[in-house]
Length: 119
Image (cartoon, rainbow, N blue to C red; front, top):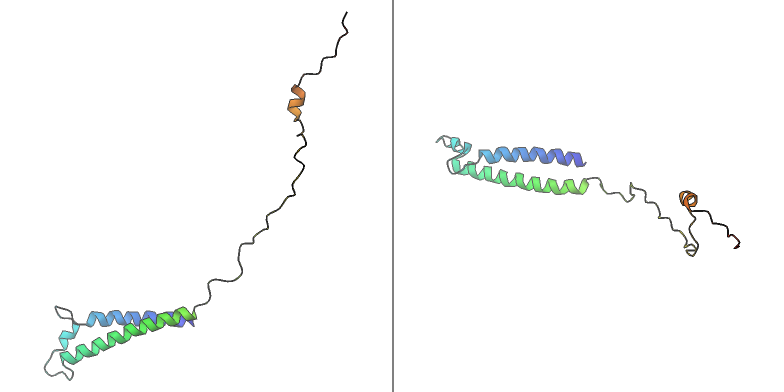
């Protein structure tokens, strides 16, 4: 349903652009070409009609835009795509123990010298 409202909004917007280009500006627009004396609708009536069409199309764009936002599918879902892992909690250990001596340090430490009896 949202796509239908989007297409209608685009069509009405294109029509609105065309109608605005037809309107009389300071130098005259395409509606000034209707100024012939034998016209059924005079220039004044043509401008009133084009002005009413402009306001009607502008209102239609606004209404269709609001309807489009109400009919859009929800972009936000309640479930997250990222699975959160629970942080691992470790129990506190005995911090009074001594760390083991690495293998390199054990090889480099000098061997204890045996005590010699005194003469």
